[in-house]
Image (cartoon, rainbow, N blue to C red; front, side, top):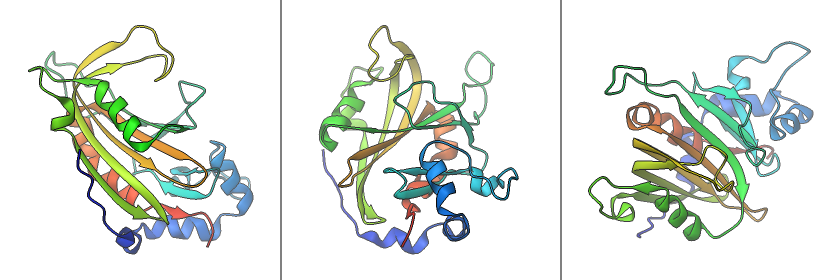
Length: 218
């Protein structure tokens, strides 16, 4: 597996909307975002822009989810933040494809070990190596090393969560974009997966979200 490292150049192109949210939202609201709450101001529902902002690393880093992504209650207690992503098109049976899912959580283990675990969650229809078909990229943003992983195939879904064990459900034609954000406070995982057409439609938005992360305070 080859890693390509770039510099912190992504900061120059970060989302101006996210930077504006950071300036005008008080610290207590940022703490609320870190705990999975929805940002509010003066007792009113948060604007769409602010409702898509969430935090990782105990509130130290802010990210802004793409427009149209809907924040939902996490399906597992180990997931800190979860979004549902609109589906794209219909499946072979003519029924609408399942929506995409993005989960955010902290976890242990090395970057390499977790990437290998993700490879193991996908199988190729022709029996070839998933690792050989996957792509990785590393860079720095917000003072943190980030590794992006792009992998596709038949996904072995664990309805009860990644560490719950039990029977898996094969989901052919799936794709996952994932980011590992490193820091002295531990690693954080952002996993966006779903039908390949749905992930392709929102791939640029996911990358923009990751590359546009900013520190919660200067």
